[in-house]
Length: 505
Image (cartoon, rainbow, N blue to C red; front, side, top):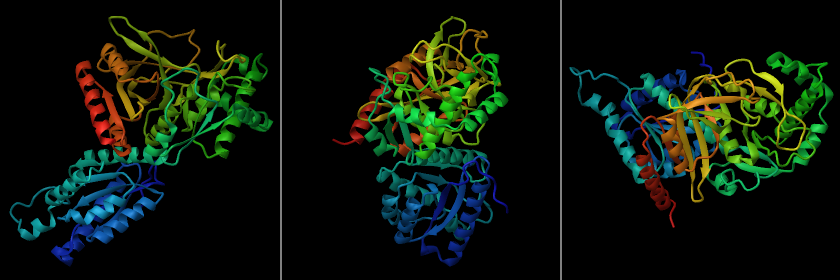
């Protein structure tokens, strides 16, 4: 059977099946055949974005340990799925699970969906006892305090494939973070608190490496951009976007468009040379750049790069991680900022935007390429893409450094079209209605310490964040349709006590 194309097909998860020698060779042969069929079915499932590799049946402590070491060392393996077809004494798993450095999913399924009531005998019971064996493994995982995702249901159920797929996307996001390099041009915006953070702890917890560079190095790379590259980008802008007349060739401000293209080319080359897939800048440190990077940043985000404005490396990391997790899914994912409110009694909503840098992956139509004044930064007017986000369900997510831990904070929202055309707002924007409503969502966001910088994604749901937080050992707080301020306040206090105890003295 031909391999099913996968959006993240260069990566894989391993399905390992537990048993023991007690039941004899015939049973182990059946277990192996069943495990192969389950792995093949999950591999063929459209909902699972990575390859699913059958890693075989393990029956001894040494085999389990060796498999876990191999999975941990394989750069293409992003996680391990464990399933106990029969009973597998869990003490055999201690050494292997202690060595495993990849996310773990405990799949609680069984090969047969229906019981053949009239034919069941003890041979059948001994072969098909996942209800028995998985409880043994579940106890050990709890006893070892190992983070994992548990999925329950028959392996042919679409719900099971969807849950495995969400977990695999989270595992890919964590895999990306563990090798991610972030380029930080300049420092944090002066005196801003929430965009600061502990980069050492981020590398210990997530694996991400944040490196600082002077903006002068970028400016030098921009100045050295070949004119032919600029010409190509200008043509591409004209093909992909509705470029206003003053920016087109022969227009009064066409040179500003060429400057923007030069910045994009230099920025892209700088990142590629350093194998960095996320970056930040700040309008307070532009050096010799001819304008604040606008369209170039937007286009890099559309190509999957993470970005954070004003030195916000945490949001740059989060955006890149969620871009990877969303690979192949409909809907965009963008850097965002809660900017202002519409507080009318008949429909309160948030208007999100930024000075320039919103990703066109969330655009409702063809973006317009425009140039407008910018009152900050002290540079000539920057070129940017202007558009309105497509309506539909989404989540806005913030990554916070609370000193003793990281917190993921998410709010489920409904992106809507603005009540008017916004003809004088010269930036990309998104309007949304937070759940359960603006008043409760905003109060909850504030008491949870949520940032004004976020990632807005219409491609992912909270299930991926839930799995990601579990894998990374960080806190997740969700504001949704069922949230009340009183309950959230209690949750935050309980979480604080838990993470303080879990972190040790």
